[in-house]
Image (cartoon, rainbow over all chains, first blue to last red; front, side, top):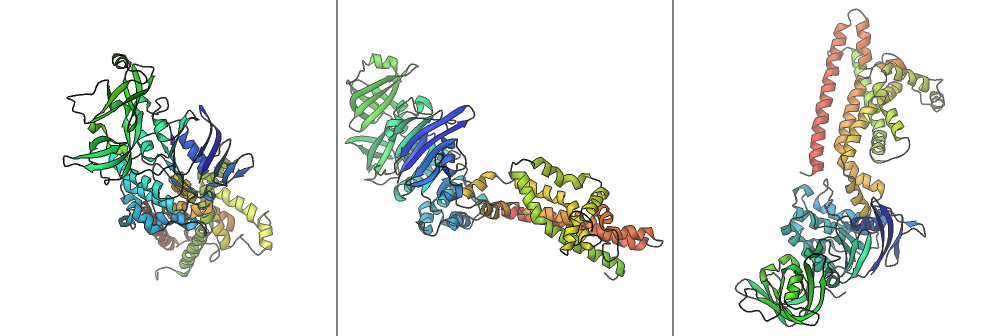
Length: 365
Length: 230
């Protein structure tokens, strides 16, 4: 399964010109608002007609301006999950879920409705109308509706942006299950580094209508020049395994042999997870720290130091757990005499590891 | 209705028949025109909008005269249609045509407002789920505008019941053929001693108009509740 996108389009004040290929799994379009993400998704969906371009899912050409091919939206076999859900208010949840199924071609590979309903936990909502659902429930139904339309590609345009943090935490696991249990490729738009870290198989970073970076989440998120929210969104992504749950409310993770503690997470012992460590929550020391309240200390070697325009710098440290990024001042870099290859210790505050930065198992891309 | 004379009964029955057919025949066209005006951008859209609203602002007698010129036995449309066996001039069908045209702007306005209230994003969602334009209209737009369609139809029916100027100019005032309720009221007022009959018809007119208004409010609100999903 693969998706290939080439687009040229003139937007007010911005020229969109991009070209990328996405492997199977979740491809995240990542960028700040106004970078052209939604335009890309709408062009793939056929809701917007770009000046020129070509979009192909496997060998299924959705449009190709050179060949004069333009499939109307209803022939593209997509499942589009919108930011606002867009459930049909006059239909019940069950009818909403079935809507796409009515129009799917007979021979299409179908998801079992029972399995989708069970996976999304919406069995008790089937008789209700959308007006009687909470924001999170609406979005779960929207996911189910898109999935049951037998799509060959799922599009999701900031599906969590309209929800509060608690609802986001409620919905994200369903996207992880979608990624891990359903074989349909997903093109997912977001400006949230946490969502990228948890979901992305690969990331396409957009800026002003262009692709500025394309690669695995851990690479793209580590680059402050790409992060849509600036340096604040920079962070490292580590692969970890749940090692133990302790009585004092902490969970222990095994990260490449090193121990990490964080507030209790719901995942089972032995489960493989991704965890995002925001660079601004990491402190550096050039000696083994003592008498410190922070539980997480990873020792390593400085891999690179990237100075920004302001007083800050991003130091990447190679630890047994993987690359950890720290956002410190340039003055500290000088005071600690940090340079490439020098030994240093990264200190991560336990409570800084937020639950929304911890995600479920990731299938290898 | 024992207190109505045969001529009055006849006028009432004719008016109901004229208004029923006028509403029924124009309704699909009204939905289509309202949809085109609300959703499509095409050259001549303003002209179409003006044409639809013309009967609302022209003096009814002018509309009636134009209908007579166009659909009369010798008219450019009336002649070929009469050869096909469809005659409007001085028939109840002509009264229905006049009533339909006079009521059309009201119908289109009500339906258009309800179409404009439907978020086009829902129609887009329908398209991405595999429904063609026509199916999106049938499964998303139409159910959601149903309150507006019903309100428009009832409003058009009431307007058709009361149509007088264009009708009397186009198809005259022939008892049993083209003498609708308002024409009958007018006719009774022209003869000595006709006031009693006219008053009875006036009361009936008021009752029908008020009932239509209440009915459209009631049905509109019920359907709106159902569509809004609460």
